[in-house]
Amino acid sequence: MEATSAVCYLIPGRAETTEIVDPTSVLHVVAMPFPGRGHINPMMNLCKLLSSRNPQLLITFAVTEEWLGFISSDPKPDNVRLASIPNVIPAERLKAADFPAFYEAVMTKMEAPFEQLLNRLEPPVSTIIADVEVLWGVEVGIRRNIPVALFWTMSAKFLSMLHRFNLLDNGDQELDQIAELGEVFEANDPKVMKLALECISMVPKAQYLLLTSVYELEPKIFNSLQAEFPFPVYPIGPAIPYLELEYDSNVISVSTSDNGIDYLEWLDS
Image (cartoon, rainbow, N blue to C red; front, side):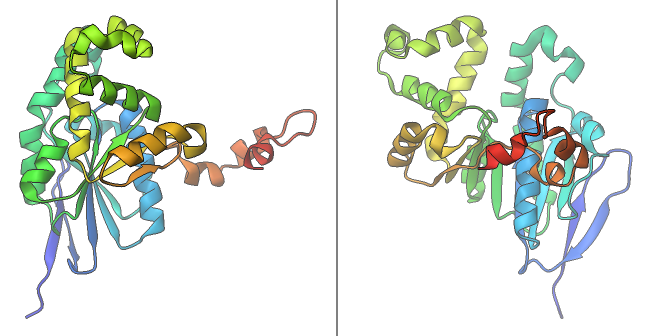
């Protein structure tokens, strides 16, 4: 008897949708972004690019029920599916009022629902792509023996500075050795910075690191990270909607200035 598996995607307010797939022919990636527009958009753009390169890749994009409502109508490839976990964190409209509480909730309340989602997904998950600022992403992968690729949405230099700070023996006493971090610590809530540094401390335990930067812009930083970490460190470039821009005639029309210079062509040269 031929074995088949059902892929179940949970969408609030709707019946589960089920698709029969051959588990031997599908690579199943689960993407877990930090619940914020500046993290979800880049992660989705990365997933769209990956899906365009490999039609046999199935990507489950995990978000809270609230974020599912925000993005469920956005166009996406057939092999990128949305799945939700319960709203266990403060609502978006309340985030700004107490961001430290929101940040802490992401770190402490989303892990269990995410694991419950993994239990329901078929075929078995091949890889997890988790935002660096999802503290528990690597630990989930370790427990389940699933490779984890961490995704960083800021500059490689900023990640490198935070990583170096974590390696300092005397912590705050040596903060002046990384001068650029002083202003960062002063501008952010201490609780948020403590949790952010805990997230950075998980990076060496991952199997891959994806950075939304360009090697040519930060070559020394990338060389340093690639030499230090025992796993691939990939500069993937800016995670913007390339595929949409490529076919958007409005973007093409405004790329040419009044003096006849095609700025997109100049940037590509």
